[in-house]
Image (tube, rainbow, N blue to C red; front, side, top):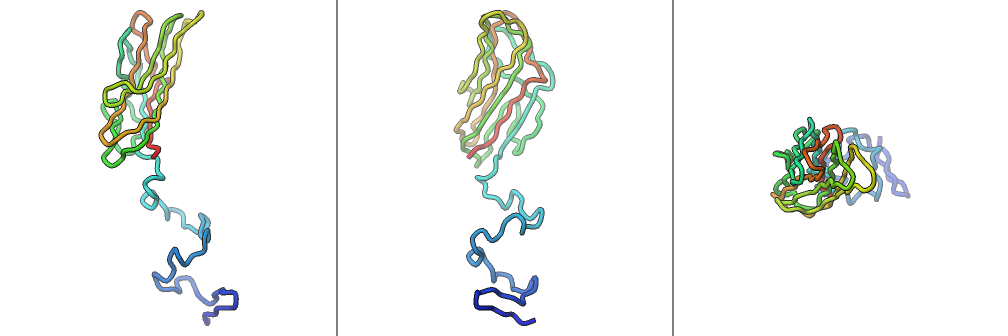
Length: 191
């Protein structure tokens, strides 16, 4: 079949594979002429995406068993079971920014405390490089006795090798239990 270019610029007579490599480049294609319908499944993976479009590194860790939280003492919580860790950056109960991955990160932690009484506090904090950074607290007022959940989140500007940990504090008068089924620590890179 002959190759024909008609008056409107439409080309006919070219079969699939009919053009040599390098003839068509991004400058030759019309804007928005290729969308997901034209792509073969699996043709685009993370290696084809700009690094700033991915939310990595990211991690999620939980308590595999209940954790004893001493009275009136800041304690690092032992999130000892990883659900995922894209860059092997969560270890020893802390997240450490990998080389070349500095930027803004979002962190969230939720903890369930087995018992909190009236007029007592349950506080959770993020520590950055060993110093307190962001926190959330609950101070009970009125008549309440029983378990409670507390959540805090933060966006932190981090450089390579900076690390983030989750701590908790309670002043109920004795040891209390951070509950395994209600406690997790998660984070991911924003930019």
